[in-house]
Image (cartoon, rainbow, N blue to C red; front, side, top):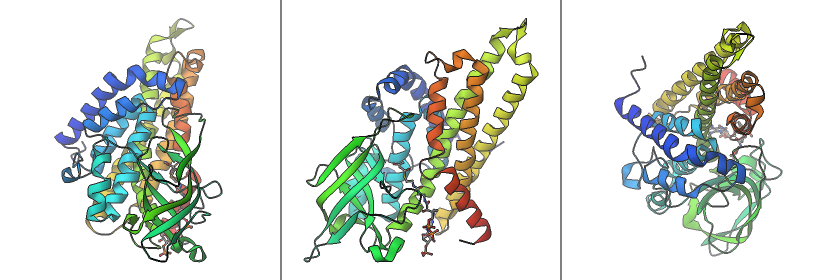
Length: 387
Ligand code: CAA
């Protein structure tokens, strides 16, 4: 039916499904419970090419397209969204940005080890007082008189993978008076003086994906580590988030698919009042609505992947399609996991089943990489052209 899905796409989807079921499923509940970062499985994902799916082979990646990335990420998230978060940040927030805006030297030095999973990448935009309004930042980068390096000071928050990241793409202000046109991007090495990590967030869901604050105290960033031109950072951040939002949509789809499949199995097996609960119309209605929303999410994700493919041929944008996919898939994940718990009753509420983990993990997809409210804003602005 979908002839844009090739044999190669099906192969990576199957490889991700096998890996998730054989390697991640046995450890997912443990990592959720303890909050331990799953470094061993993440390294193996790197060896299999999952940490740089769209990265060309010459930079250590699998050299595939966004659809391949989305299909593989969905399979990983169907088993564990925490692994999916780490995978998505490496792929779309980190590698995509460096490939699109980096110099040849930057790509060789900072993409190759991340795409292979040897090292971990992160992306840092948010600050304690700057979330949805991403153009307002208190952190600063000041070029030294000799013009050799920038001195960076400030505190960033909610940085996914930061506790383990070797390199981070940082967005900070070089010319605050210019507002979003004063934002510049830098590649940060986390083992250099002036960089430290703040508190690790105790999170409701995706508990195995470590998230922390990062602190810059007179961190000296060489000029050659600036990503793009001065003042280009906001556009880089937004361009990268468009790619990231397809990843989060795929993550949400994986969570929703897992909850739907569990619910279908349970409806066929559990009996009440002398019949299978799947024979009750109220359960049937839930399953039907869940299935429609899951499939509609998948179609919006395909649309976004194809829109990105077209956009990358020129210098076009696919912001609206990415936001539509993320908005709908994340709200679907929340809806489907809520209904799945309801269908399972007490069993769904118990930690003995993964449904409550799916439910907790689903919530973040409506928040990070732009809240549902921001996605609606992007979609409406794209439709009207009004700000
Ligand atoms: N691609 C390219 N350029 C873009 C763009 C995009 N997607 N979106 C905006 N721009 C450009 C605009 O064209 C405009 O350029 P000009 O000045 O040349 O005209 C400029 O950027 C400013 O755009 P806006 O006026 O639209 O900016 P705004 O201040 O109104 O903000 C917004 C727009 C959509 C609300 C944006 O701020 C936004 O997306 N906010 C949410 C931020 C977000 O997603 N944060 C999550 C961070 S990552 C994370 O969650 C943690 C993690 O580790 C995973």
